[in-house]
Image (tube, rainbow, N blue to C red; front, side, top):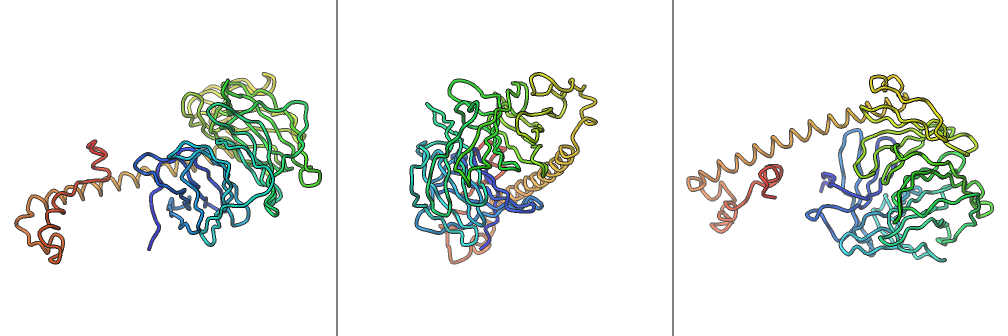
Length: 382
């Protein structure tokens, strides 16, 4: 039986790159009509945009939730915390999903785990240590750091020093860059937005069990990185440049932004947000940096990596648009065919409609079926 499906609209899901043009989507809040009791996992082939719903075996399958964090350690997906979709309860449990066997396991850990939370960040260090930072609830946010040793399944809090620690926050963006530097950007708490960035230097975690905070400074409220819910990835092997997309700062953002960090990790260099039709904002280093570029010159100033990704994104959007239009046409044609059959139902033998074995009751059931799908959505009946 095929597991091919359509990816539902998801909020606060987690996305993991598993190699090439393939990724895994774990959980996320859904619309009421799509809600389930258990967490779902999907595999997405970004080259074909085919979606496969993964099987789920095991005695302990996590409840449907969003705001959790996930990391990939070899072939296993570790999922921590989040907010249950149906109960709104915050969790601090740890589940492991094996991509080979499609089996869920509730991990029996030692030590003191992080408190229940959502919208936290998580990364994996040296293929062994899972690092959790921040997150929160409706009434409280955190800036604590917790580490799980995946070999012993034991939680511990590393000794973290530094001249300044970040404010408690949730919904921030994060990326582990070369040199075991964990970059934390943006987010917000119960008091205000956090338009700043920090590096958590984890180079001594495995040897000394410690880390060090290095502040990168205020990014400026007008930049795409000063928001919640952005996605950020490293884009060079030197660990000095990252690329961020999207987020929310009172409105949903459709912007790409580059962040350059000096080799020492002390502070960001020119930070260039690149909205599609606006000027390039000033840099985020103490107000210094290149002047704003007129909209007509944005393309010329655009980073080659950003330009390439923007072109790929445009191609994917165009392909999805064509596929959606084709599906809508097919749904409309099917609905018109059903209406035509319904008009001539009395002239057709029962076997033509639903099979002779089903009899009159089945014939009446068929006659009452609605259009469904895109047609019902357009007509406002769903």
